[in-house]
Image (cartoon, rainbow over all chains, first blue to last red; front, top):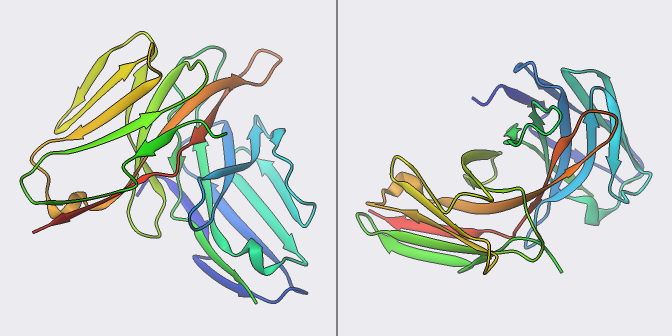
Length: 116
Length: 117
């Protein structure tokens, strides 16, 4: 257990569905991240929230919409996805501060998403 | 081009042998981290080495960093079947503004390590 939980663990959705992925961290961290992991591709950073403010949006299509209501929770809202969006979606958190020099991230177990 | 490319892509060894994985990167870094991922699970942080360090140990793990060659290696000694996993290096660059920063990690594609009992 890393202190980061994700639900659901598995999700199958059609291209016209709307669903949400949830991430919760119990570590008191102030930064949270969404990553996408596809087969045969490096882990891709999608979004970063620092102090509940989105600080990074890595050219992610608008069919992915993040939400960070507080420092412990992070959501990824999904709508009208494509089959190529099928992947493992990982959430992570870290404790960040100015020039702290260490940025290890703690990952949740991921949500395996299949778009049919 | 991506930061953090691991080599080899796959490594198969017998229990008790040592496993060495390499990582190369392209731009200057603040630190380099190694993570492990069991099949279909989240990543687990193993070790972090700062740009001014050359070698670091943690249990059976030994990490080296050569900033002149922009490369790092992860050595797992006396491997066990439970070490079977994918191993990723991640390089970081500071990002953010306004008095705070966060670690923006860029991951490589990983090395799949299989340790046979």
